[in-house]
Each structure stands twice: as C-alpha cells, then as structure tokens.
Length: 278
Image (cartoon, rainbow, N blue to C red):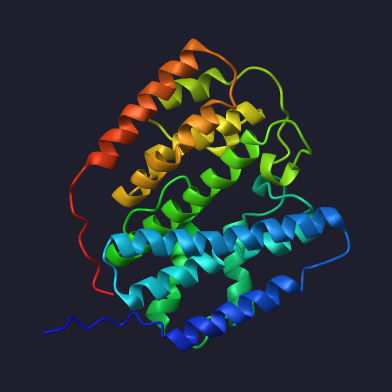
C-alpha cells in the first residue's frame, strides 16, 4: 500500500513559482552597477542551488514530488537577499537583517505559496528559515529535518563553488558581496583555528577578516549531511581550492589534512539514507 502524505507540489505549481521568482527578482534590476551585480549574483546562486539540490536528491532516491518541493525551497531560500541588498547595500546580516527571516516575510507578504497546502507551505518556510542558522533547531519532524538538511547541503555546495572560483581567479576586481565587507588582512583568529581542529562549526560573529571567512567555509564540511554531497565536495576539490587561498602555515596544513581525512571518511561511508515518503 502506498504511503499517504500531505506534502504535495505539482509540476504546474512549481512552474508558477518559477515564473513568480523571475518576475520578483527582475523588479530589483536597476542601472546602478553595484546593486545590479549583487542582484544577479544571488539570482544565479539561487538557480544553481536548485540544480545542486536536485542532483543530491536524485542520488538519494527521492520521489518526483519530493524533488519538486526541494527545488521550490532552493529557489526561494535567498529570496530575502534582494530586498536586503537594495535597502542596506550589504549581504551582511549583522549589518542589516537576517536574510532568511526577510525571505519568509516576503513569501508571506506576497502570498507566494498560497496555492500549496498548509503542510507543504510550512516545510518550505521552515527549511528556508533554518538554512542560515548555525544548526537546525531540535524537535522538528523527520521530514522537516530531511528537507532542511538537504537545503543546507545544496546551499553550501554552490557557495563552495562560488568562493573557490573567486579565490582561484587571483588578483582582480574585489567583490564586497562575496567577501561580506571583511578586511583582507594578514593572520587568522586563533579561536577559529582551534575550533576547526576540534571539529566545531564557526559562527559569523567570530569572523574578523577574509581569512577567517575562508576558514569558516572550510568548517562547513562538519555540517554536510548526505553522502552524495560529501562526494561532490571531494570530486570538485573545494577544500584544496580554499586552502590554497590561505597563507602558508603548518597549523593550516594540519587542519587541512584533518578535514581531508574527515571528508574521505564521510564520502566512503556506505550507509544508505532512509527514503523520505514524500
């Protein structure tokens, strides 16, 4: 007997959401080159996160309905960024507002998800509201945890791609939108280095420099959830690309080797994930 689930998002619903997204984002296009570049940066990021979440979800054996729900939350996960940059000219939440909460407010104000049933709306909203937190709150349902983890993995995969490409490009025009207005100064926070070696995540509040931000990105490996995402990170060599953008340091080499060992262990793990009945 097929498992009945209240979670549902049809192909027609998804197409409507994609059209709404395109129309909404284009309303922020403007003649100012700095703002326009920032808007396009987040538009393209959102679309790539859709591709990443579908790639991981398919490898996990998710249903077409589950994949459509995942794609919708990926499409909207940064919908608050457009209003954020237009109003504050920064993507730094501590200098403006929490972009995930802004996104939830946009979706509710615009009734963007009105055509979906309550259960589907709620799981999309929760995954978006959790995607930029240091960790997912306790007490959520198995399905909410699954989608939230999936979105966090897909988001990190594309940010890994974005920053590693940016760092590998070498000297050139700086992007404050990517560097989060952090100073490109020598040295790194000892607190952050210790956290990395101890397998701990790093909060945005701990960052003092661009080097700290690069270390924070490397620490994301501790918050990856699904084996396909670990394998993608390993195949694309993201950790090495970020490490190569950091200063020469025996301590960083030690941390890098530790992270590579962790990544290989998780990439080789053959535990099959439980298929979510959505």
